Amino acid sequence: MDTTLTATARDNAGKGTARKARAAGQLPAVIYGPSFEPRSFNLDPVAFDTIFRISRDPNTVITLDFDGDSVPAVVRETQRHPLSREFLHVDFLHVTKDLPIVVPVRVSTAGRPVGAALGGRIRIIRRTLKVRCTYDNIPESLVIDVAPMDIGDMRRASEIVLPEGVELVLDNDINIVTVYGKKGGAKAAVAEA
Image 1 (cartoon, one colour):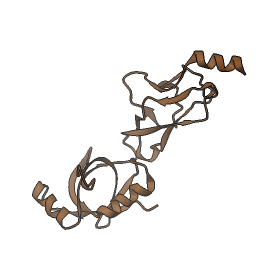
Image 2 (spheres, rainbow, N blue to C red):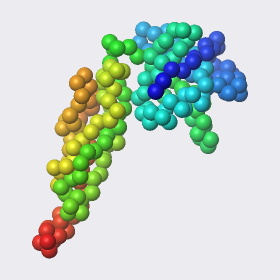
Image 3 (cartoon, rainbow, N blue to C red):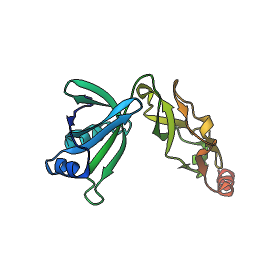
Image 4 (tube, helix red, strand yellow):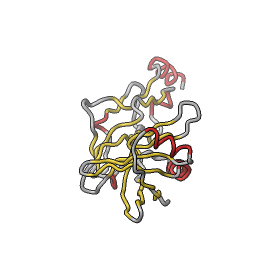
């Protein structure tokens, strides 16, 4: 999938200029980063939205084309209209292969827990976790194997198997996933069987 967007430079960075850009069917944006001179520019909002609808990954690396100058970036923040949900403004973070960034990554589960046979259910306590890595190592998701989990079991952040070059950014070792249900009901179900 091509993730290149044409960036049309804007001379002024301000609300009036941004309003005029939106009135002309453009999406105002800015890019910044460590040792990178901030630039204000406009994008095609349909092309921007299409990339994320296809990838379904908020950490997709976008290549911004400034008149032949290609700049890799990730979306740092978006602003949307509260009713129409149209994009109003986008902030991009300039990325390089030698400088790690911190991004939120989705948590997902694999397998069916042992406790599910006894009426237990999976509860994902944290849907996303922040990781530090270079932009070319951003994982699509952090997968937790829940197959061996019984009712009452929990998996902590430290138990997640991380890809090489990826580290969790956490203050504490927190619970991520649990299997919950009634243990008494589970014993009765086993006794009946």
